[in-house]
Amino acid sequence: MVSEFNFILDLIKRLPDEKSCHQYLASRRWNGYMVCLDEFCGNDKAYIFKDGIHYKCTCCKKIYTARTGTILESSKISLTKWFVGLYLVMHKKGISSVQLAKDLAITQKSAWFLLQRMRIVLGNEQDEQLEGTIEIDETFVGGKNKNRHVNKRVKYSPGRGWPDKTPVFGMLQRGGKLKAYVVDNVNMLTITKITNYHVRKYSDIMSDGFNGYRGLERSF
Ligand SMILES: [Zn+2]
Image 1: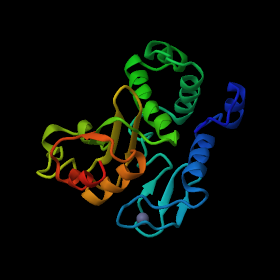
Image 2: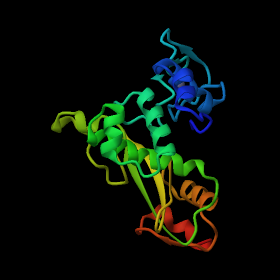
Image 3: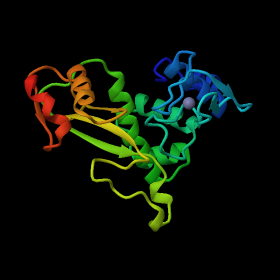
């Protein structure tokens, strides 16, 4: 993403506001055919709101945007800042969260958060498989749980994760590269499939004893 922009002026001309950023993301994500993000629906027809950003599923009536269900969702930072941030991270190797905060006029905490997410986005754009020793884990992001009053929060379920959060499956190669993806679930089939694709065969995998990881022993 944004790697097609060679000059910061290209980026500013192409993506000057939230609407253009959302439409750019939508084109990269859906190739022109938006898909309802409700896992039980998956309908590909939607009304587009006047703002050019929000979609309403014609079937289940859920409202979503191109950000929904992606790693770019779980923050209040505008897409304009996300894309300029991505550009800076790609063109200034090793930029600090202090500098990024200044450049984007955001808090250092937000900048640190952005840097973590960008590492994931950029890691995912590299095609080569991970190898060596890889730590895998699943985590849950997003949802509004933390903003709720304590007694209205969704309790940690006896399975894994929180019902209102998005599961993300991550693979971290010792010493650097990270790939992480939003997944529909973290069952054995999903995890085996994604790991087979992104990790070289017979690499060493470190994980906890979660059931979803049982299928990996045959290949790793
Ligand atoms: Zn729907």
